[in-house]
Amino acid sequence: MKRTQIIQHLINKCSAKKYLEIGMGDGLNFYNISCNYKVSVDPSATVPVTYKLTSDDFFLQNNEIFDVIFIDGLHMDAQVYRDIINSLSCLSEGGYIVCHDLSPMEEIIQRYPQSSLSTDWTGDCWKAWVKLKTERSDLDMVVVDTDYGCGIISRGHQELTTVNQDYTWELLDKDRKNLLNLISVEEFLLKYEYR
Image (cartoon, rainbow, N blue to C red; front, side, top):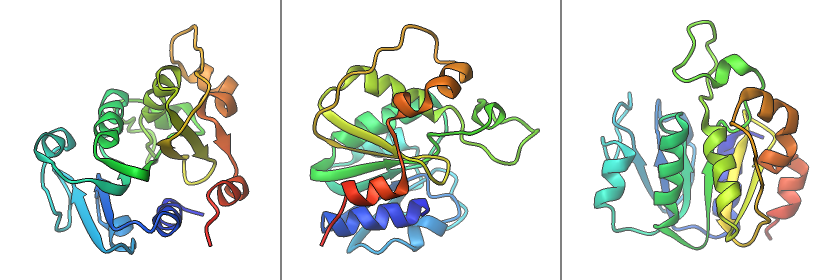
């Protein structure tokens, strides 16, 4: 299961009417999502985009509410953190935020800036995720263990995570399941079952 299938599953589950994608890139994901109303944001997209702006600029002028939001923009922890916080402010009740690239399997692909030694790159998005898990008990956060880690956020409740050290690769590698609240694809399908 890839990010597109996870997003579409959540759109179907909550009967989403409005979808927002931050970081459209080549449009491959965006064009394969089925939803009544879709908005894309990317300052450097290689295909037509709804808003050719940074996500920060988009959120400053946005007054719409979305049912499902996909974050796959600038792969830097501070930016991902801001994108999640800003997305929460325009997320409908019962809606979902999906974040990509949260579970890098090698240290080199999570480096910021991107290393020239690897074509794969997740950036250090996982740090923003862990920070939110230490701060926000009002959210339900899980990462599906597929496609470099697809995080799902909804309003709910979670026990806060305690981290008493720097957010290093060694920390993630040693305690990935707990830090990310990692679940399998099968667990995702059970947790987010719809009829």
